[in-house]
View (cartoon, chains in turn red, yellow):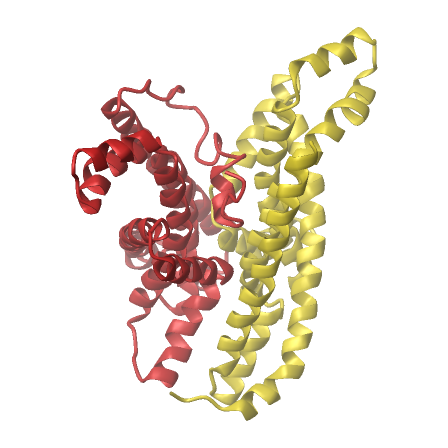
Length: 248
Length: 217
């Protein structure tokens, strides 16, 4: 079994690192998604093209390889070194930001054209239109797919253990080596990740309720024990993970 | 910028070995995911609560926990009371099992999309249960979920480097080994590019497929 020392010295700090990596990379991914997603609907073809290239590039790579590349190849190639944790956050943020940009693009495209035209008629600038009219209406559409991506991101944070960031999974491996027993620690790990995913989903449900109420839509159905993420979106939201929901 | 083409040349033979293993894992993993996902999806529609509930709980749990930790679990914990498997076999089973919980959702959506009238017609024609599924529901359901399944094959491709962590030397594992032996880093870049080169045309292909299936159905 895991001794108390192992638990306090390895495992608990590992849980905290996992939480940190999740929050930081989620914040980075949200910013990237918003910017790239907006740019992909730009009027200038070159902006659309470049943001599209960004999307395809980061959607095509594996986050694990990107992490290794940032940690091992970038220092040699460009004489620039990251702390492992920030390399992990950067890799996850850029990858999931690319997935998220597809969500943002889709949600913005789903805002009725009349809304945009009304903004033009009232003399709003492009930025005002985006901030005051389009984003507030697109936001409730974005929350459920963002929830799915957030769960994927949480699962993705386990990858940082491979680049020597002492997260939960890394601590789990240390405990396995130290105690020579694998069943308890890996079961505990899986349960902990599941609990985190559950908490995140509940939080996002609250957010969705708020967002929908803000634009006068009915709140989502389902109580506390309704399914976790990825449930309602098997058809479309999860498509954003790979083929970009082309037939939206 | 440091870049040495000779290192690239040295790495290439191992790259092809790795690519072969990646594709092998991908094909076998996809087959497991497609088959097992259908089993989960049908079990979740079962009339028996004793089947429906555990299957739902299990797929929910597998889908919401990291593949990496599941691989560790399969590799280190399962042999304690079950069969001991090679890294590649473990990796394939891990990928297949993890993605089967995603394909189960895809099938579920596909089955749910079959109009109620089709079920009623099967009942009216007095078709047995097995025939209702195999001759009426599944042919209609699977047709419309093919592109979504393809998406998950690409997602699986991008998750396949994880099996290197338990010692299955696919593309990324070969790159890691090579880089550690030679103190170079070109191999990571090669493999990173290789993933884009495989994944991008594949996603274009799926978009094409999607358009065709939408047009004809």
